Image (tube, rainbow, N blue to C red; front, side, top):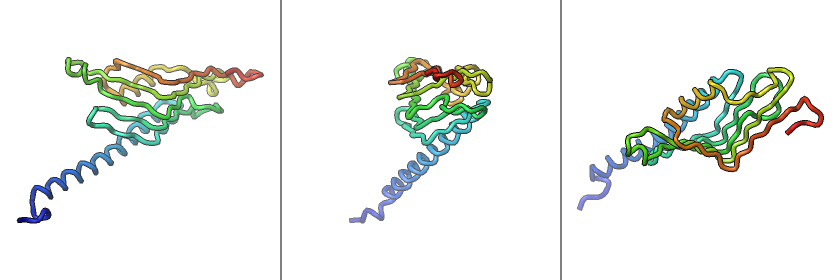
Length: 163
């Protein structure tokens, strides 16, 4: 009886599994860098994503610890932060021929800041934001959900501060 090490199919399987693991790990790093690069292209803002987790079998990826901060002025709070954002394909609609997906935010925080000067003001979402979301998730968004989210309107120029 041949030993397991001499069977050619065993080694093919080992190589395929190893290749899959290497591609999966490097793909997650590449996607994280891509997300950081695309979000940082928004004028006047800097974005950082700590990690990306890929779920290829269900057509989804998760963005961990996203922070978007205004670069000009002295705004003490980030424009947007969330510990987890999940982008996924909606399979039922895909089987019906529609290319749609879901975006879910978990514990997101958005800070809209009013100030006398424009560089200290954080405006609401406008056209560059929508374009960046389309670059990160090119499917039509069929479901958008925010779980346990907060939206704050702040004005640090008033006494007492408005929150």
